[in-house]
Length: 181
Picture 1 (cartoon, rainbow, N blue to C red):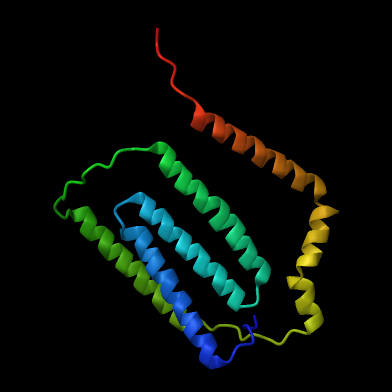
Picture 2 (cartoon, rainbow, N blue to C red):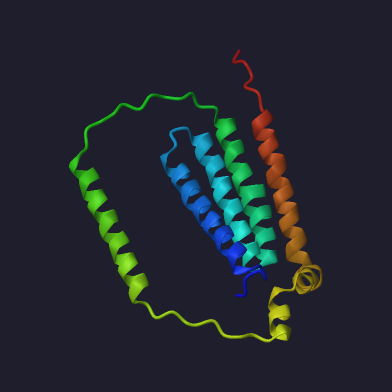
């Protein structure tokens, strides 16, 4: 993939900023105690990944990332957290067990194995692609034409399914508990 035609002095800091945003957002998802904060940090990760797609000239992927992951998945997670409305419970600090130590060594071993495999892998070098082929793969117009001609029926059925799911979710959320007589 070709990166956005920005000078290297601008492109590299943006890339590093997005990488740090993804890393810190991921750590925020894992280490924050309140689940709502974890969901919000997950949104930060999704937005940083979308901006990374924009930096790599994958504008359709960036738009899909924002619409699907930030606009749908992350909002759904936040709504689910808010609908559950479970009171916060204090977590008792426990002593480190043998299972915790075993899990830590397993994760460290898998991470080390992954790093070794990444460093020893021969990566393919990017090849030059003609502008004609590049436009055929990244054209939003072609995707839109296929969605509204060849794939119109599945597209409409999916929209009806999502509408039914939305109405069902609203019905469940608004349902009041009737008093027992």
